[in-house]
Image (cartoon, rainbow, N blue to C red; front, side, top):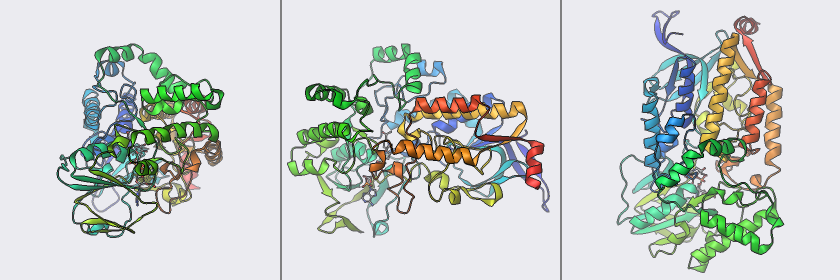
Length: 556
Ligand code: N01
């Protein structure tokens, strides 16, 4: 298919670009999707809202931003040369280095030619007559594409809280998920951080080291495990590189969360108190997300979960000197791991600094923001700068910002009004030829994102190749298959402790958003096997139609 075609029918012929595939987003998903589709010989246009590649790592430039999965694992595996040659400097690379890696990949695989930056996709309308999508982008242009792939990221729609007076604040205001490109220096300033999720937990120690005073406004205390970040030695890098085939295999096929670690062989209550404490101590010393892999029942059995939660609460009490502050920092209202567990460098110890204070919003909520202060019910806290570490409209937020119109004029937003509905997280019935990478209904945010991204992108590329080889023009999830999958996702979630937390996994952080557990918790290995089986059975649960069939259906 050529990239430019003249569309007539209006008084003036309009030049409309046409591609086989439009990909929305040039983060890790969009970049790899482009790479795979190009290898199939397809014409592809990637639209990216930001001024560069990297997605989440392009936007999240807040102080202390790092990956919470070890970089040797949070990296592409599709090119052995790439994984053998790229040198990660630290166990958890800082944001700037991950962004450098994303840029390296874009250059190495010559991706930029097909990416258009600073462009927003505003609308996508399916035309049943041509089995193609009309994609309206910012600037008033329309592109036509046979397929559209939403690689829009799960945590890219920053949530600014609706707090009275926020727009009248006269100091600086930053959102962690939309941090300025220039260096922000808080030296000598009084800073307020609102929120205590991963972004705050990473940024608080760094801001505290600069600011004259830092006030942390906490609504929900969070569990956090030390990252134990350190420089990687060349021996450590070499050892991982040599073992990459096995590390990547285990991450893809065996580890539920796509992270290679020694997998647990028993439940927490099968060990006695001493053995269990020793196990937690060992995981705490090792640091990182794999703390939750100490036992195999921590997210399904409340009593087992309590043992891990008690251990972390005791650690907080040990680290934080002021007993009252320690108590406030100990989470009590959700099982450990039911909100994304945080990893940190000196977060709890930061509250021992004389220039840091904690405000408990559960007992003393914010009433309003004044021009130079945050006013709670009990007190006014003067601040020069406010950092909103208040999270994202996760998983569906960036998809919902695009007006997606499928068959019979149905919009995706209307269809998802009561919660996202997908088959395998990959497609939604009524929206043919529209794929979603790491969308709701897939393991996505519960996993090492790059493992899930590669699996989805490979599946989508293989699927498009299959369709083209057999002359199919349109593919669509069946409603029955989708309903069954949605029920399955829900059922599996409710066998765990996850739905007990008011988390962004549930949409609970966005007022009015339906509370549905969005990601698929069955594990990346099981999920991959299901997707592969569906493909092996001729894409069971999806309908594929040839050109003539779909035109006849559209006409009827
Ligand atoms: O956002 P969050 P995040 N008044 O939603 C609070 C990934 N990530 O940006 O819990 C007061 O977790 C809110 O309080 P509550 C990672 O997957 C990864 O920190 O709703 N407070 C909460 O404390 C992570 O899970 C890395 O009661 C308000 C906080 O703001 C995800 O991104 C690094 C409020 C938001 O926490 C999101 O993390 C960073 C209000 N009106 C993030 N509104 C890596 O390391 C919200 N809050 C890869």
